[in-house]
Image (cartoon, rainbow, N blue to C red; front, top):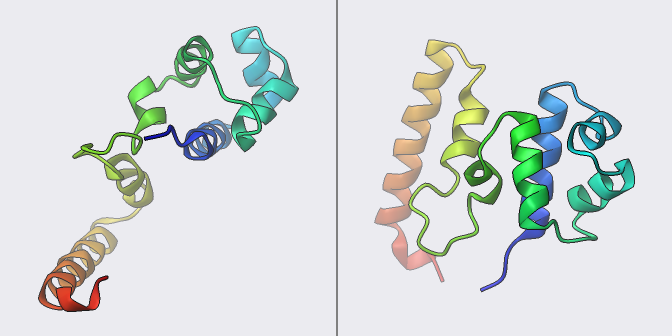
Length: 116
């Protein structure tokens, strides 16, 4: 199994942007260069564990948030992504999304023969 550095980079970029922080500002917060942040976000370089800890601290998130989805037995896979998607929804929108997910899950399980 390999670590999905593209997924980690995408999470860093999305979180950084949602907090209104530029690559240069993040780099300054963690004592690294802006090009290095760019390389991590685009997965052209693999972030070290120390860099991930520094980035998570600077963005006020956990390292788990960045690594979510990299474990094969991760029961929480996509949980954070889903929460982030519905975070700005009102009650009616959340209920509609919930009902759509229930219907989709039922359909997927009922039509499992379609899955290959």
